[in-house]
Picture 1 (cartoon, protein in one colour):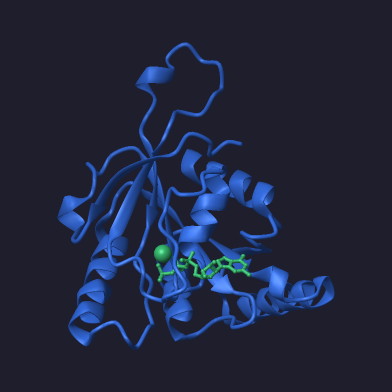
Picture 2: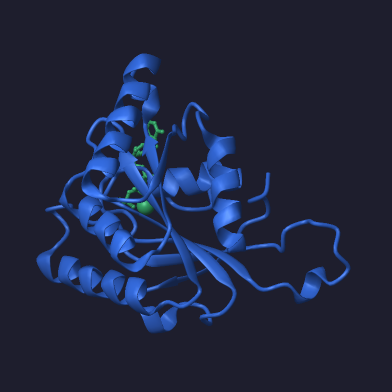
Length: 208
Ligand code: GTP
Ligand code: MG
């Protein structure tokens, strides 16, 4: 697993508290309860790494995880640039107080615009509810700025295989029609669907 060995670094309430802006990181974004933290745990093969919950709005921090350098056998491994994964707070949940939502809207916006080590976004979307307004905003931001985006259509275990592939095909068609450039795949943290594919995608994005 190219994402093995992830470790909790810190939880930040604002951009300035994140680790030094160097090396490469990939951020996980998505609506509240979509399954961001679960996806992070599945990808890193580390169950309790990111806290998950049935209550939407669980992650009210930007949580940074460090990854060890990729094992490519090179002797200068220790001097390789840092790699990180970032769990972003969920958005779109009405019960999170308005001032909190405003705060995160601003912080996520600032993060996306200013974070120089940000290599790509992993957008976590519930396969049963594709592309709500905030998903579109994220995808549009990526299209406008050229930031790579990889969409995980998660909770695929809730659909039949056929329905899941149909949802993926429909999403790709929508991307083409709307000029969006994201890659996408079917995923399930609980069933393990698409986990290897997603690990490789994230590892590749971190290398860019
Ligand atoms: P916030 O931090 O609140 O924004 O949520 P999150 O996006 O981090 O979601 P989280 O990973 O905490 O998961 C939310 C709920 O969805 C939990 O009850 C999970 O067990 C469930 N869940 C996550 N991924 C899957 C999946 O692939 N399949 C199924 N069936 N349930 C899932
Ligand atoms: Mg979470």
